[in-house]
Length: 520
Image (cartoon, rainbow, N blue to C red; front, top):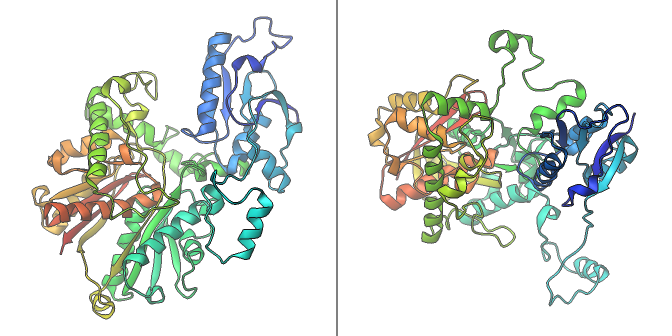
């Protein structure tokens, strides 16, 4: 394998450290745009560093420098793309320490020999950190104390806790801390999760349940209905109970977007010759062609079709942040958040302004959408307990609501995010209700235009929709969001004394779920 250009390690540095040398055949290098490959998803620390360096390079060299996020395989896909690029001086990459770790673990053949190193930006050494007043002065002291004391005595932070398993287990434990039910009585554990690779693979519903220490005889299954995965988990659980085949179901979901970037599962198979879920499908290409299929394009198409201006979307986003901050101050989320590692308040909502939003670049040239109008990258887990009338009596439970209606509908997969519109109409018709009968609505703010188009079509009262803010402010941990919104909706119903709550979400592939609950 030939050596390629790359930036070594992860972190901040000066563009001058790159020291690019013009190829011998190109006296006026660079003559065309440069590609800067980041082997991790957009929005993370590595991506931020890459974009800073790219902008500095662009200013210094006088040619566009395009940042391309190549995700999947815990960095292998992106690092492979750097290694296999033409060695013509027009492809640069941001190599990170993960590729070295995976090499020595035998998970990839890639090593430093596959690249031409231009500069080391920085190196992040591992370390143990304790409080300043800790009695442990060395790692040996801490290790000896851990060995000498019982399990659970010491708590760590970050991925050392187990990443998404840690969050998933915290969700299950938090649920059973609040309900007096023997976990062994549960008939099934149904959890949503998207991008089921790495620690999210292998049926994480089952594995996280076991990691939480709960009975092995209780089964588990993982659901992928994209953004609506845990809402669908609740629907499947409710259907199992309605059918009489189950009495107690634990439903929820989890997602680790900070470590497994969004859409990783769609690109991880590039190493096997598959560039996307659809590009190698002749039947798909015959029906839809080779046009871009993405949530970003879908959101742009929605903004255009319903004539939603950038200014209107920015105002919607600002309102989401303001509502979320007000809800936090009022303590609205306190009974639905389980503290994890000392964190008990959502870190997403921001002090922003229309002026700040106006300064952001659009996602595409001539487009309307910016990052301010999109949901945030988040880690999270959620859990709810579903019970039959029989289980309620046997376990002495006090139900808070009943599921009045569940359904899912499909729509145009190219627009992708319009599904909540026909799904809401269908659900209301099936339930014999009108939108005016609904006292509170939770519709996932994947992008501002999704909700705004839905509002235009349904004529719903905006004051009843996402009254405590939405995903633009609070984040959208894909597999966990559905059950999370169910809890938020129920809490709001109880606060306002309402009867019906409606929840809907747009989902990949042009699908949408709807759940209508009735407060008891």
